[in-house]
Amino acid sequence: MIVVGGMIGLGKTSVATLLGEALKSEVFLESVDDNPILPLFYTASPEEIVRKRYPYLLQLHFLNSRFEAIKKALAHEHNVLDRSMHEDWYFTKVNAELGRISGEEFAAYESKAAGMMEELAAIPQKGPDLMVYLKGSFETVMGRIGQRGRSFEQDRSLVDYYRVLWAGYDEWVMKHYNPAEMLVVDMDSVDVVHRPGDGERLIGQIRDKLAGMRQLLV
Image (cartoon, rainbow, N blue to C red; front, side):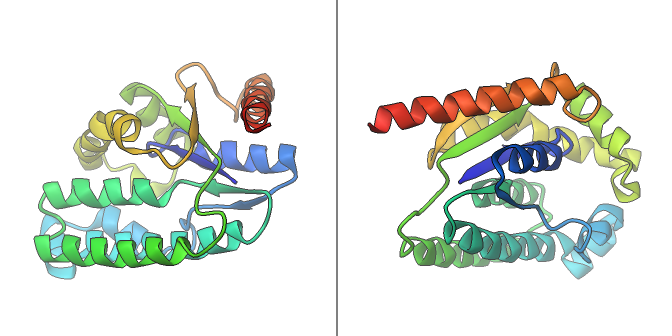
């Protein structure tokens, strides 16, 4: 099982889809288009955030949908997942630090996530084999968010939020994510959407990484 991770906008869905096609694997994409809370989270005023608790509800939605996707993926031999449950926790932590998720909500989230991880521990394959981690500059993040054109992501008032997420993302992943081998991809120089050759080279790098991992197991 392969997880594609990284900051908002860097191309996880595009890379995961490309990887699924190349490896003939099922792809479990992040719940975005059918997520009723996501547009509300991005467009809510600070007062609405406090009153309606959209950040907490959004992270619960992602946690539940990710958990279901992971269970389905672990039941089969080859699959690709768009983002990890560990990254969901990072988003929740940042929103808690910003005061958008309360201490009580964060504790409830962590308790629920821990119960899910305990349930996953009963499955023979407990986690992914490889994380393909996409990293890039803040300018690349903002450029890609603009290119994909989701209206609820475009408000300039969101720039500070994106910057806070981006500022700690790489450090958190490098220091705290350890369930799987990792391949880091510099998305400042890779564009799988507009340059097909970049996608082909990336698939080649992933195949080489997987082959090297298999050799270590022999």
